[in-house]
Structures are given as structure tokens and as C-alpha cells.
Length: 87
Image (cartoon, rainbow, N blue to C red; front, side, top):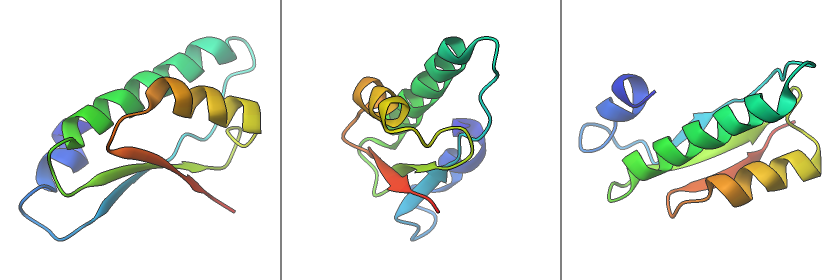
């Protein structure tokens, strides 16, 4: 992720946010998939730290249950990440 979108944002554009979109969770191992989402959100937030970019996780697809969103945001929290509730 950071080699793609985030690496081109700070200092080169006036984009205030980078949205990430978890969508489908496998039925077999939801916990492992949620851990991957948490890791990616932490990595993106840490990479954005010190820049003008805020990482927002949009909620849709299989990531709409409040307990799942809370788990991801509590574990993946950084000063540069937040939740954007999608419709």
C-alpha cells in the first residue's frame, strides 16, 4: 500500500485523506482477515504520521458490524487514522 498510493501523496498533492476499503471477509477465518486489516491500517497510519494525510477506513461490504469496526479501530488506531462510515 505505501509504495503505491501513500508514497505519492505527502508533499506532492493537496489530498487531505487516503481512504482504504476493506470489503469481503472470508467465512473460514474472519479473525485472521481482520488481523490483516488491522495491520494494514496501522502501517498506513504510521506511514502517514508527520504528513498532512489522514488515513480513513470506509465501512461497507462485510465490515459493517459495530463490534468488528470497533475491534479494527481500537487495535489499528494511530494519530493519522479514522473511520469513515460508508453507505
